[in-house]
Image 1 (cartoon, rainbow, N blue to C red):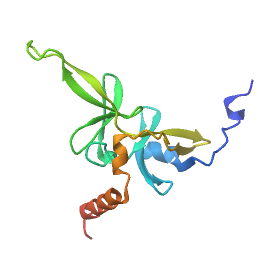
Image 2 (image 1 turned 60 degrees about the horizontal axis):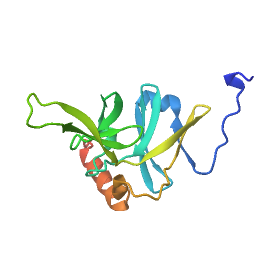
Image 3 (image 1 turned 30 degrees about the horizontal axis):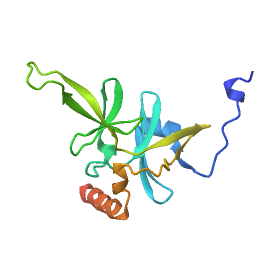
Amino acid sequence: MMSPAEETPPALSPDMHFIGKKADIIEAGRVTKQVNGCRDVLVVYHQGELYAMDLRCYHAGGLLHNGDIEEFNGRPCIVCPWHQYKITLAEGEGLYQAVDHPTIRPLKTQWRSKGVKQRTHKVTEVSGDVYVTLNDSSEAIESDVYQTEKYRTASLDALLKLKPKT
């Protein structure tokens, strides 16, 4: 049996896109990158795991790299800074707080899924380098709407307006 240091790393495939060094991503906590010239991706390091998803929130295009990471029902989520939508890091599910019986007091709520709303992508680490393989499912996911030049340019303009003038 080979020791972990002697194991052969997985072969890089052409659909794996370099994001950065794992150590740098851990230090930053999250990074954004345009992948394959067409998709803006957010990579998040949270509690020892790397996650990747579309950068803009499925609801209204908010930039998720500014969102807080919180847990709901034990599931790590990113919270969109614009409208506080909760999105699971692993699956891209939108979560909402439901009331089972609104006429019974006190109200009892629980977190429920709206289904997958945010496109997530596969993260692979090879020898300290982090790669993303885009989710190429042909099924439309709501966050796909914000992967156009129109929204990319609008987001860039908004960021430039936020930078202090020197």
